[in-house]
Amino acid sequence: MDGNGRWANQKGKPRAAGHQAGFRNTRDIVEACGRRQIEALTLFAFSSENWRRPEKEVGLLMDLFLRALKSEVGKLNENKVQIQFIGERSAFSEKLQNEMVRAEELTNKNQGLKLAIAVNYGGRWDIVNATKLIAEQVKLGKLQPRDITADTFSNYISLASLPEPDLFIRTGGEKRISNYLLWHLAYTELYFSDVLWPGFDESELDKALAFFGGRERRYGRTGDQVAGKNA
Ligand code: IPE
Ligand code: MG
Image 1: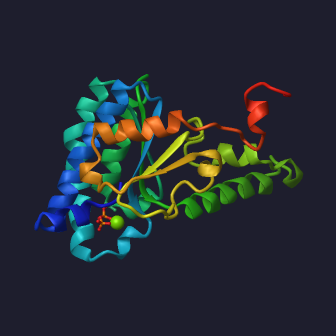
Image 2: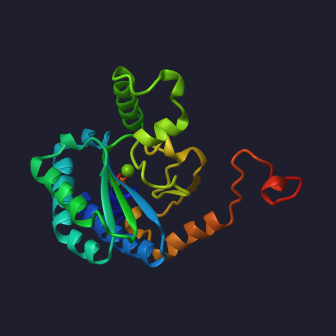
Image 3: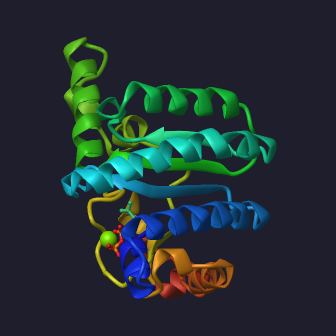
């Protein structure tokens, strides 16, 4: 979700207003995904690199995050959304960490949209973290190095309970992954939009979904094989 700051700039508003508008848009897009019966949505809300921003902006984002958790979780729960957070959450205030646990516990059994929110998340961190967990298992003698496969990794990496992402959307014009779900994106269709996040509305979401609908997913095979010819 990129482009909050530029959106505010274009309107002659402070960056804070951009983040506020970005938050409102996030709420709308989560609802729109629910209506479209999308199984899972992962939002990159705060990267492990975002701490490098001016202290004031980081503080503001934390405030917004806390307020959003307090105000939105009840409604999300009513809408049967199942919430989980991914990332190194120990860096956040105790208050925020408690709200995250509360949201996860409250919505744990919900059967609607599976919403994952990446906070203090980095794709490399995720891979390193999975490696540490796997190494622990090896040390305990529960796993042999020769038995480590890509599937083993998929079990120890974030979002292990979700299907691999079909579609990646980055708004705001940059064509980069920026240390997002590096492991998970191996076969994901990548969609880049120039629209700044606060302006990425339902019609833009539908454009992204139409793009996805037009892709042929070959997973290394030929087009003919996928079409069932010469398979
Ligand atoms: C994305 O918008 C929001 C967060 C990273 C929290 P930006 O704040 O990166 O907006 P730009 O890139 O400066 O426009
Ligand atoms: Mg940005």
